[in-house]
Length: 144
Image (tube, rainbow, N blue to C red; front, side, top):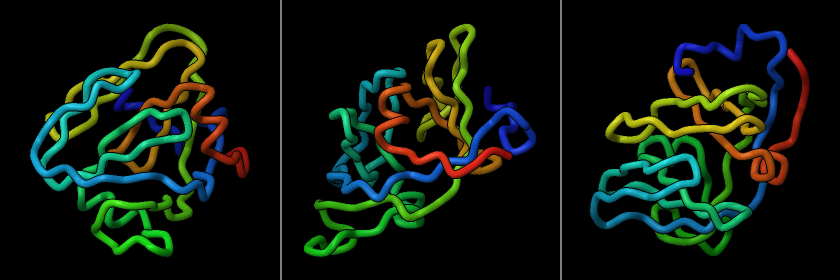
């Protein structure tokens, strides 16, 4: 679904990540995280984030620095608590069929099941999020 454009999809919604503290550690070496949606590779220096349901996902360092901010008591660039900066995304709950998007440093697929959400952060960046995680960590701010 990397070619799906949720910005042009009238049935997609606009959402913003809730200002939830996210525990983050920075990877000292490259690795792979086994996410619910499939394995995601990361490079040394990537931020390893832990979400509201204990799930983990990597964010490449350049993207992390642009989209997250350290909370008081955490020195930027060090392990600690961060939150996602307010950024509108487009989202759509996929109701039929298994689907995938390409992510990570190795450009590998992660998979979604019916009921999961396709999230589009920008023209090039997409992800898959389970329904309960989406509802716990995003606020819907509008349609189209």
